[in-house]
Length: 153
Image 1 (tube, helix red, strand yellow):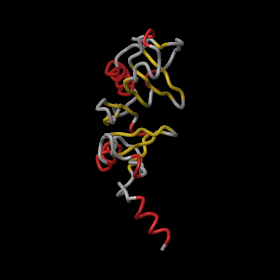
Image 2 (cartoon, helix red, strand yellow; image 1 turned 180 degrees about the vertical axis):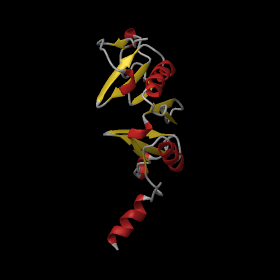
Image 3 (cartoon, rainbow, N blue to C red; image 1 turned 45 degrees about the vertical axis):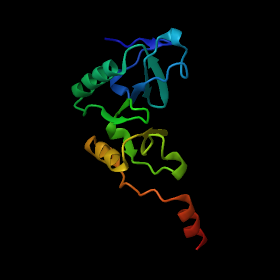
């Protein structure tokens, strides 16, 4: 099955997809395109009309055929899943105090793409480690006032 890429059709190799999530309707593409899913290959983003779980099934099938682990999964701040090629991921990434909250507890990176997630830093590290990525020892977030005092001393 081929994906229906919008708004500009393209031929892609589903096994090379590194990041999959639901789109934010009306913010990313006008509704008339019917996009449901945003995915990334390298540094380029694509949108398709198939639902994310369908895309994940296709990607995981291609990954199994090439003896790779299935896509790893974490949870976006709004509660939706984000799937990613765990072997390409690094995290958890330390966030600044102002970035934590409103459902954001941690983040991970794939290349230059930073994805903020609801999962706690130790959970992010475990998912990335299990998927063969670069798990970084979770760091405790230090309040900005304490950081300033420490630098002044």
